[in-house]
Length: 265
Image (cartoon, rainbow, N blue to C red; front, side):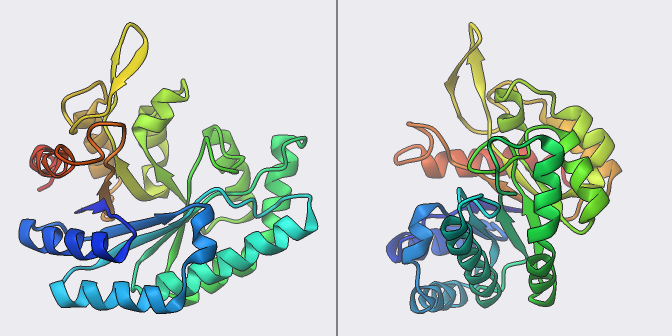
């Protein structure tokens, strides 16, 4: 397993995060985009890559979030798939190993219909990603992705087996579901892990501090990751109003790195 974190996207932020990663032994930087991906250019990606090379840092993953790849609206679907195609090329240029994206979402369709439409749309992009040296990790529960339960993944794997899970235990817990059964039963299907902590009081999320300071059962998470021989990235996600920005962001990254290292042999 390799420890990294989600980096800032602006070139100044990439420079600072690449330097910080190199200084503190983080092994991969993840870059995520939502609607702003349409403004990302190949020239900017080339500059990002040059910064990573300068500091001896590595890109772990590129994320394309919120685009509806299976929309019933033809124009929206076309634009979304153009973005997906670009994301594959940009991720390859960054020499990342993971492409994170959603499965699309037809809001008035059944889970079975969503899975069938996914199977019509995605195979050429899965193949493009494979040729580019990328594994597709599909995120659940938000951002134009019809994946809300493990059953949605099970339906898709029968049709398109070569896609994995981007798993964030905190997101699954906050959605009201159990994350440990996913790790127990489908740890071999996890392509990318987000490490984000949630701290609850009186049933409400009140903080997202460093791992080990909240309610996620990290020891059990790592037990199942080891049982399934997970060898991918553990990408720390600074999140929330306090721990995602100075002065706590870097402290959160270092404290989380220190905490989860105890689970890595």
